[in-house]
Image 1: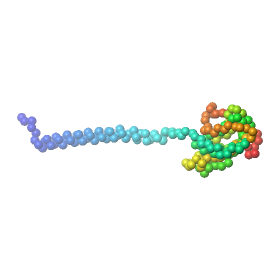
Image 2 (image 1 turned 90 degrees about the vertical axis):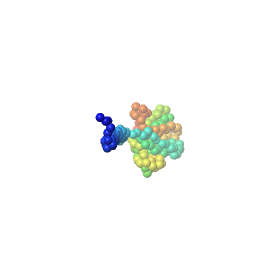
Image 3 (image 1 turned 120 degrees about the vertical axis):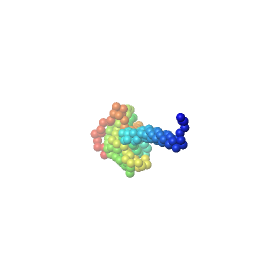
Image 4 (image 1 turned 60 degrees about the vertical axis):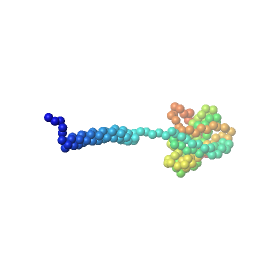
Length: 179
């Protein structure tokens, strides 16, 4: 008996083999695509659960300095605080101008007593000044600090931190902060 097969049978065998190879190749391609695409699909749904944070920043520029008074332009992307050291007595703060892309960060006027050489918090902003993307000047507020003209205070304007890390808040003044 002869092991030879006819030409049509060989063609059928080759077609069956080619079909089987094609099926295996397409399964492999789909499996590979699934492995490549699945991590992207899984992570796409989790992006709404990722909390992005921006480093708190406060931009400060001294606008004017006179005996007993300083005016600063402040733009921030987080609440901030102002501390004073090297002065004893009341320090009055007043926000005099708010930029087009800014908001009121806290009280418009306040008065706190500074404690001397140790830093004392004299103003605490409740929120950031910037409310929408814009140039820094448009996101800023002008705050004027008034104090005894015989004092030489050192002011620091920085982002607010946890309560345990901040200087104590000065006592409220007994006089009207408007005056």
